Image 1 (cartoon, helix red, strand yellow):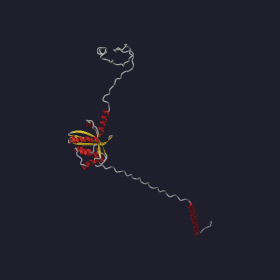
Image 2: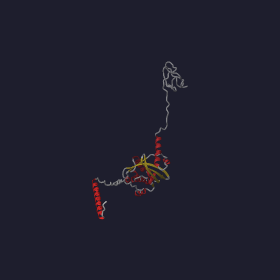
Image 3: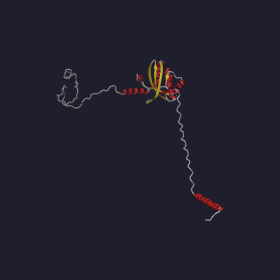
Image 4: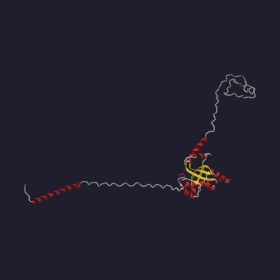
Amino acid sequence: MINQTPLQFLETAVRGLACSTIICVMVGLGGCGSEEEPAPVVKKKPKPAPVVQLPPEPTVTPVADLMAEFQIDPRISLPEDQAPDNDADRIAVLRFFDGFAKGDAGQLSGLLSGPDAALLQRMDESGSFQEATQGIMAINVQTGSASLGNCALALIMVDGEFEAQLWTYEVDGDPAADGARFDSVPASPDIVEHLSGDDWIAAWIAVMEGEWARATEPDEVIEIASTDLSDEEDSAGSSGNAPMGPGGGAPGRKRPSGPIVDPNPSGPGGPGGPIGR
C-alpha cells in the first residue's frame, strides 16, 4: 500500500466527491425523459339544487274582519273552521245569510237562482217574507264540499224554534256585487232532528238520500194471480145449444178453469136456474 500524505488524501477525497456528484447529476438528467406525474384532480363542489319558488298560499281574511267590512248582521255566526277557504266564497255566504237576517229581499234576489228567486218575489209581494224573517234570533252557518258541490247549511233560530236550510252555491263573479248563485236543497219536515255530529251537511245528505231511495220504491207490491189457460176437454157435454150448467157444456167446447160465469143471467141459467141457486 502506498502511503498518502494528508494533502494527497484530501485531493483523493475531493476527486471522489466530484465523481459522485457527476454521477448523481447524470442519473438525475437521465430521468428527465420520463412522463410527469399527473396533477392531482380537484373535485368540483356540486352545484346547489335550484330553489323552487312555491306560489304563495292564498290569503284568507278572518270572518270577523269580513263581517265588519261588509256590515254583516251580528246574529250570523260562521266559525273559522267551518268557513270557506277563500275570501270570495266567504263574502258570498256572509252576504247571502245577511239578507235573511235583515229581511232584505232585494239583497237576496240577486243571489238566488230561478225557482227560488220567483218564490222570494211572491213572498216579498205578499209580505210573508218580512213576517217569516222578523223573528230571526240567530243564524249558525256551516260550509263544506259534498257530492252536490259547495254547500252552506244554516241553522236558523226563529222565535225560539230551530229551522234548517241547505243551499248549494257557486261564485261566478264579484261576490260583493251579486256574483254568486244559491240553490235550495229539498228537506224533510223533521230534518232538524237528524242533524248531529260535527258535519251537519253530511248528515243532511244522508237523510235526503234515504228519502229519495224510499220515494222511488212502489207504495205497494201487488201480486196478480195467474190463471191456468191450458186446454181441458169437457168430460161431459150436452147436445144442441143447451145452456151450460155445473159440470156441463156444449160438445167439444173448452173453457178456462175457475168459477163458472153465466153469460145470460136472465135465461135458464139465471137466478132461477142451476147457477143462480
